[in-house]
Amino acid sequence: MNPGIPAAARGNLLAALPSPAAGEIFQTLFDHPGCRIERIVSHGHASAAGDWYDQDADEWVVLLSGDAVLQFDGGDVARLKAGDWITIPAHCRHRVASTSPDAVWLAVHCCAGG
Amino acid sequence: MNPGIPAAARGNLLAALPSPAAGEIFQTLFDHPGCRIERIVSHGHASAAGDWYDQDADEWVVLLSGDAVLQFDGGDVARLKAGDWITIPAHCRHRVASTSPDAVWLAVHCCAGG
Image (cartoon, rainbow over all chains, first blue to last red; front, side, top):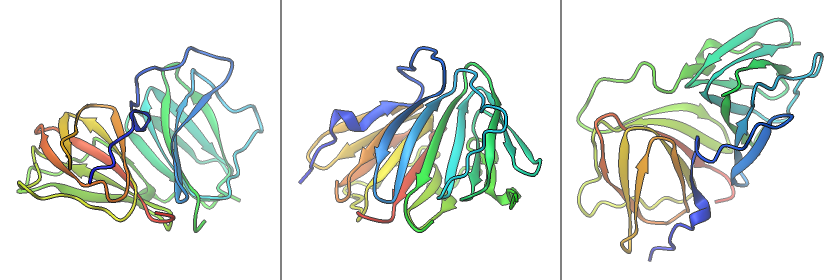
């Protein structure tokens, strides 16, 4: 038996990009007990000065297009280009130092097992 | 405190592609209790005739480069180009009907909650 693939369960990562907005635009593509996958369209957005992400679970993120710089608490910097992926452990404080206007991310947020 | 990002936890999805081999090459990029992320380099590989994947957990997959055709038990076909993603529910029987020589996938296998 084939349960079929609902149309909502398909898409293209770089298609139907939302128009530039004041901040980043987050779109959940897949929501599951084990993980949540989202597309993030950055439009040149950066974290506010002194604003850190401090997440309860591990995150795996890849920059799909554009350029971006992640800054980690303590001083480390990751300069990313299209295709670059990085694992950000839970509670590894980080911020988005900069993104290019065409920056699009795919983020996989782990929801189980920390 | 910044625990730092180990070098092993970074990479580029389309860099250091393995040489063509007899079949597909699977590389785990991230292994977590909630999900496992892998890169699949297809090199034109297709499933053997009558050979179906029937997975116990949901899978989210995106074709990063090239072209590919997925076939579902029952007759549905999904023709994918670069950037196209699709959710394949658990026990949705499917096979890889064809891939182009430059086909590279990113697959997120859910490990919790089925």
